[in-house]
Length: 241
Image 1 (cartoon, rainbow, N blue to C red):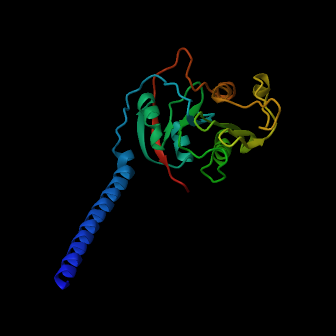
Image 2 (image 1 turned 120 degrees about the vertical axis):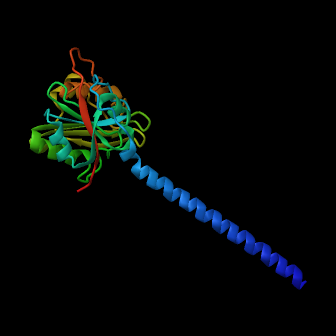
Image 3 (image 1 turned 90 degrees about the horizontal axis):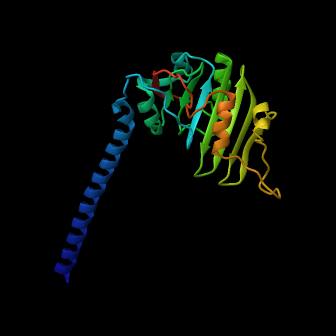
């Protein structure tokens, strides 16, 4: 029996060390993947040749600021690893959780980042505190967000450091995230007045409402304008202060 016991113990030991070696190999691979992901932004190459504005808005989030000084906007957002990027490469790469500070359009600067926190986030990186800060510097700042998968639709308006209007709805949970301030003239004109889920005939926002209000308040994200000029913007990672 003893030889059999030794053989069994030997086989168990071999299997244990093989699995340990594989586990270490997998762990090493995961750490390498994490490092690669962390460095992906720096390795991405953006085209800095001016091109025409590119429409966006669906399944996205963006800020609009009343200024043409993109450099100052990037500074106020505390962006790092800044690179020049034209519209096509800037918008295309915005899914990598960075801010694309687009070239000015009709006196406005747009910042696109689909991965920014939603309107319910109360940190300094959240939309409300961000546009509140930007409006202190530039006078007017707006936030817009929409994502059809979870039925998220939101907007906010800040003037001279004060949030004058903020609305957000999450259809996935049937929850009004925020409804702050008086309805604006643009919301009333377009009948953007909503009910709660338990209403007899509930009325909810949709993605077209978000795009429409962005156009009414500030700028059309679809860029359906004539006579626009090519340009180059900036991309950068936001560094929490």
